[in-house]
Amino acid sequence: MRSRPWLTIGLALAVAGAGLIGWLVLTPTPALRAGARVVEIPAHAGLVGIADRLVAAEVIRSRAAFVGLAFARGSSRRLRAGEYEVARSASTLDVLRLLESGRVRQHAVLHPEGASVAELARALESAGLADVDAILRAAGDPALLASLGIDAASAEGYLFPDTYHLVRGMTAEEIVTRMVQRMWTVLTPEIRARGHERGLDVHQLLTLASIVEREAVERDEQPLIAAVFWNRLRLGMPLQADPTVQYAVAKERRTLTRADLGADHPYNTYTRRGLPPGPIASPGLPAIEAVLAPADVGYLYFVKRDDRRHHFSTTVAEHNAAVARYRKTWRR
Image 1 (cartoon, one colour):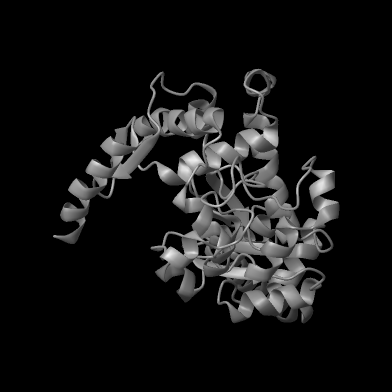
Image 2: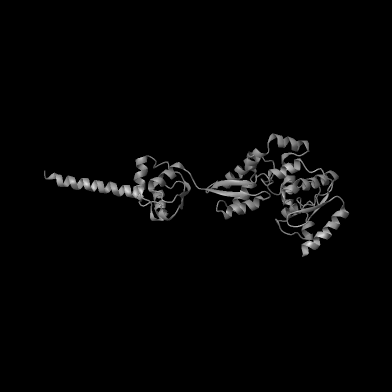
């Protein structure tokens, strides 16, 4: 009979302990009640190290409760590293399930049509996803290029422009590989065959398409600009494409000087005839299609009318008149 009070006290303590554990496991932290939180779990952190990070990020109330729960669920050795976004009002159990699932946070990164590898590298560094130099090294790594089927000195032009969902921790090689594989998907056998009919291999197709992409602002002008370049190539005229010179002298999207136009460089299409050695940017599918199906026109020249459109001419006299006319507009 005397043991009953102690039994009662023991049961009460057990119930209180269970209640405390339940509260620690099932009740969101004050920080999560206020909103979602982002936490990064490094590789090889270990269960206690993970718990410490979660406590520091204020997404769990108790390290001991998290560790005990992970052991109870049998997941103590299979929590996945990565960057996670913990939802608002998530409990410790919810946090554990998230790390068990490996549903890491994804970052949408736009690689726009006409962007170069250098521009992509800067965008990725700004997003905190990769180092500029790492992307540039990967894009020029001979072993990686060979593994991706690129017979060129760089992946320039082979990264398909699109929105990519990347996760923090991806290597530069993984990012470049994903974008190149997307381009190979777009370049169907039918597209390659059409290029072959026009005397272009894949590298030449992407090279010409990249120039069209950088010259055109409005998409409906791409077949016209492609026609100008095809006409010039057929007549043995230099392409005289400013974007290739900008690429040569590292002046992307900036005004060129007379000295720039005379630079002795393989990518200077004012001083060299034919196509440059490779693409200057990432062409989109419409630019590729424009090269494969240019407009049926005899234009040999074009000049900017404004920031978006061009005036096209057949003779040099017409072109010079247009240049003089629109130069007045530029100066206003």
